[in-house]
Amino acid sequence: MNDPHVPDGVRLQKVLAQAGVASRRAAEELIARGKVQVNGQRVTELGTRVNPETAVIHVRGKRVFLDQSNVTVVLNKPVGVVSTMSDPGGRPCLADYVADYDERLFHVGRLDTDTEGLIVLTNDGELANRLAHPSWEVPKTYVATVQGQVPRGLGRILMTGIELEDGRVSVDGFTVKGIHNDRSLVEIQLHSGKNRVVRRMMEAAGYPVQSLVRTRFGTLFLGHMKPGTVKRLEGDQLAQLMRMVEL
Image (cartoon, rainbow, N blue to C red; front, side, top):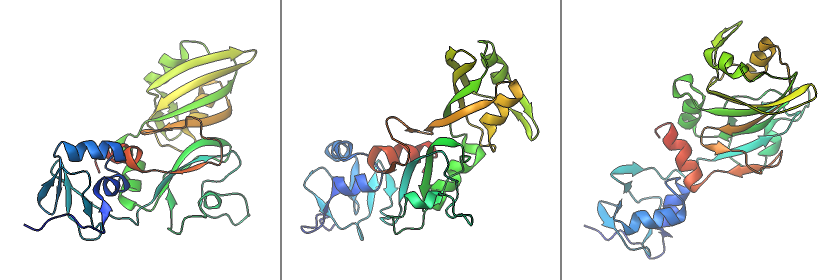
């Protein structure tokens, strides 16, 4: 069988990281443990270089597709930005933040104009479809400032479920983070993708939302990303997101 090593190729661990299999360091561990095959041969040498355009790579028996044209990014959408790729009225939109990418990206779901937080943009159609489809129940976390002093028992009510005009919806978790005067800071975990679901749910419960931030989307966390920051997903971050929807 042909030697998979290509002297002027790209290091195998880099190819695996760019494909979203794992970080480069984790990819090196996979190679060293004999979990990677190239063109039907098990590879354990970290210096192995391959041609990404022709190499057939398997990790733990599963084919790795080396489509370098796929781009997935996460944006901390600022307040005041509409969740569209263009706006006839000239308002700031998502496209303004990914103008440096030549690829045609589209957004996974929406955040309303007055909400800040994580939103994924990609040109990977299968990934986008799975992340947006209700059957995958992608977990999301929001931090909201609401009007009124929220009682500790509200979490139990919301976890049981509350009726909205388009059906019953419930949360997976609810925490009161603090209360100051006539405002409360709450954290809400849920997997529903209904339009403006957090705002409508809290309004129905009698505690209107004054500000809202999505701090988690699936395996992605806001962390210290400032509003307007865009980050391309690679390595472990992309691999974890794809594994969550079994890609």
